[in-house]
Length: 143
Image (tube, rainbow, N blue to C red; front, side, top):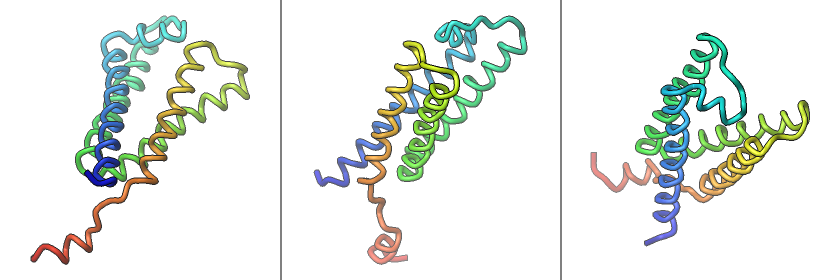
């Protein structure tokens, strides 16, 4: 198996893992918004709060999950770019929090480590990924 095929398979596995992790939180938020907020010791106190968590973590999370799965199938390179931004901005938002509000708790620290790790993996895969050339495909296959 050549290097590019290994990189493509690794990229698709990584994209699938990312989609699964996002889907897990999304389904949890849709079914039990309070369970999501329990991770950070926040009590939801009204219907608008429940609705907001369902919308952001549930609805938006499902949209992101579907987008990642679509790119996994249709355009791995764009999917890797998207995941670089997603995991990178998640990590950046936690770093901003450290500088503005102070150190994170155990949950936030663990998330920062995971998001940073996923960011590094997505960047590395993107750098190694070489999509098939459309020009080469058009020359080799008659129209």
